[in-house]
Each structure stands twice: as structure tokens, then as C-alpha cells.
Length: 413
Image 1 (cartoon, one colour):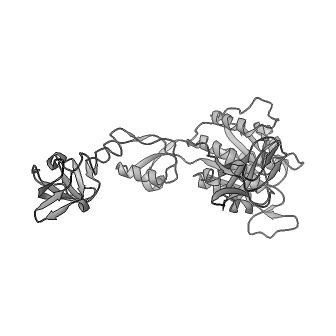
Image 2 (cartoon, one colour):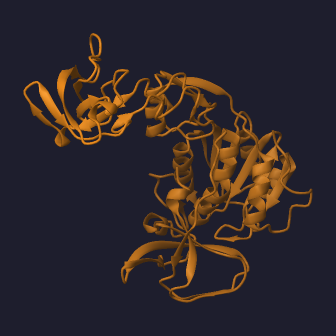
Image 3 (tube, rainbow, N blue to C red):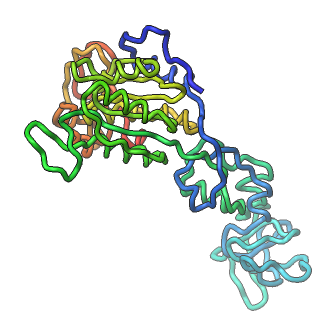
């Protein structure tokens, strides 16, 4: 499914706050489902709800090591009861329950019907074949059947990324497999005559291609299968052919570079020739020259060439597109109010995302900007804890002013 993000004229710069809801409405899941063994489900997207077919736990269990009793047998002040037997985890009580007796029990062991409380062993005193037990309340130190999940209860929700804890819950339910979404197939290439492959010697005016490796790592972290089309020359025909090939047989195509307005920037015109441009330019810094479009039913994302811009745009815009296409129920990234540890005067009309770290100062946390504002300084993203989200329009920030801090952990896979 694909829907044009905007009306036919797509030249005006759009605020990020307007673009994201349109992405959410424009894209839908395009991948099927498959069943995989539990170990292979890690990092995948759950394709359907998983419900408990039986109560978890399936029986009342002791929460402590101690003595299982019927609370009413203890009276108001506690009582000494004869020892009736021993119950261990995995070894239920054999034979009939003897009324008025206490049973030695261990954590996780099944509490037999007729007993309704467990006294902690450190609160009791055994003397031969009798044990003194304090007053107990019914249900004390007892985990009821279905405490974790009642029969039929929702255990795992479709659309979540399967983590170790989801695998643990599935195992708790006795599931050997989980239904997950098929992996998104993403095509990737970089544009730029100045780019050289890693390992190649650099000639005058050349640099190694970092963006493709950066983006491939991010895509693989999100569980995508990536087809790498390499480096494409800054020539209109070469870019056109690369887009045509990348959008065949893939769920999404992504390129970096060539999305601006220079003479050697051919992404937008090639995309318009092959399909359509849904949106060009987003009012954010870094990352204004962002191109979104389609060739046939395949979405295309053209990211800026500067590596910080490419990464920020991927995390803010590309990530929601991936989520919609892959069936991931993506929560809105949380922004945390933290005081500024710096002064700043912002004159840009665009919304800005400044690289920042969280530091301790005077017993509290504040955010400090990472030195270096250049969008070519990818090293700043290796030290940044997150991004300070500065709203559109002019702004003056003084030390102590509350800021919206977006941790990278909210955005990275």
C-alpha cells in the first residue's frame, strides 16, 4: 500500500511535526508472516497477539521457603501444629492432606488444595515433629494460580519487537515458536564522485564512504535484509539507473547524497522521472535536503550526504517509515525535560536537533552540547547521549532553562 504524502506540489519545506503524522497515515505493513523457533525470534516483530492457553502459574505456589498451613488452624495468636509432610518444587504432596497439620514447603512448590497460607521458615520454630507457627492471613506468601496470566489473557501484543523478555514469556507459555513478520528488504546506495570504498587509497578531494556502512548497520539493527548497491557516480543517468534497480524487488530503497539543489544533485529529478516525489525538504537542522517518493509501489528515501544529517534524518523520518512497512508498533520517542548547562541563541526558523551529553552538576543532571556543530562530524554522534530538540523559530536558551532531551536510546535499534 502507498499513499501520496502531500498534494501534487511537493516543493515547500514541511515541518517535521506535520510530516510524521502523514507518514503514519501513508504507509502500511507490506511484509508477510512466518513462524520461527524461539531463539530465532529475537529482534523480530511479532505478527499476531499471543494469549495464554492456560493459567500461569497453573497451580497455587509457595512464594517462600517455610510451612504451608490452613490459616484458620492457627487461631488469633498462632499455634504449634504437627508436621504433616514435605513438599518441594516439582514434587507435589503424595497422599491425602492431613487436617490441622503443617507441611514443610519450598519456593515454587505447589500448595495443595486445603492449605491457603505459607509461613516463612525464619518466623517458625520446629521442635521434633511439631512446629510453632505465628498467626497467618489467608493467601499470605502464596502465589495464586493465574497470578501472572489468567487463561486467555493477552501475553504478548502484535507489533512489538521481540526482546529476551518476550522470549521468556513465550517459553513460560510453553511456546516453541512465535509468529513474526518477514524481514523488510531494503536497497541501499550512496552517491558522490568523491566517495571511495573502505580500503581504497584516497586521491585528491576524495573521502571514504561512511554513510553506507552507517546506514547498513542501522538497517540491520532494525532487522532488515539489506542489498548494498555500492557507490553511484554523480551523473544523472547513473543515478536514474540506480534508483530504478534499487526499487525493483525491494520493500524500500534508501540513498544518501545527491538530494540537495546543486548541479551534481540528481536524486530528485531522477525520482520524478521514474515515479513521483512525495516530499522534498524538511524543516529540520541537520537534514533539510530530504527526499521522499515512490517508484511504482516501492517507497524511496533520499537522505542528505553529510553523515550526521543522514543519521539524524534516518532516525527521525526513516525509522517511522521502516516501522510502518515492517508492522512494528512504534511508540513515540520520549523526550525528557532537563535543564540546560549552556547558553545559546538560535536564529534559525527550522527545528533543530543539537547533539548533547548528560552530565552531573551540583547534584543534578544537566545537558551540555557536544563541541562541533558541523554535520560532517560523525564522531560527535559517538559521544552524544542524545539530541536536544529545539522548536521552530528564534530562541534564546540560558543555563537552567528546561529543554526537551531525546536520548539516542529512544531512537536506535
